[in-house]
Length: 71
Figure: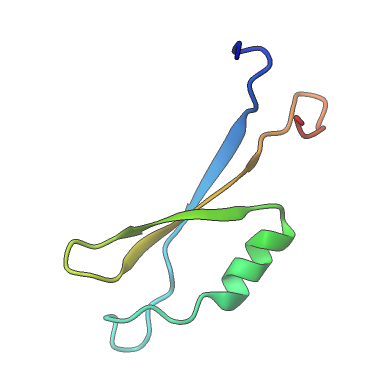
């Protein structure tokens, strides 16, 4: 596939909110739904070595210069 016809993506990373103990992440359901409504898809989590989620990684098709999504 040539670079001209390859789909382009944009990425976003989000750090999950921590509870009062700062050890456990709070349920990210609302945050996930908000990003999903904006066209973002959760594709990966990046975890701490000892456990727990450090970042949520999202992607969506990149927009072209004219504002249209590449398909």
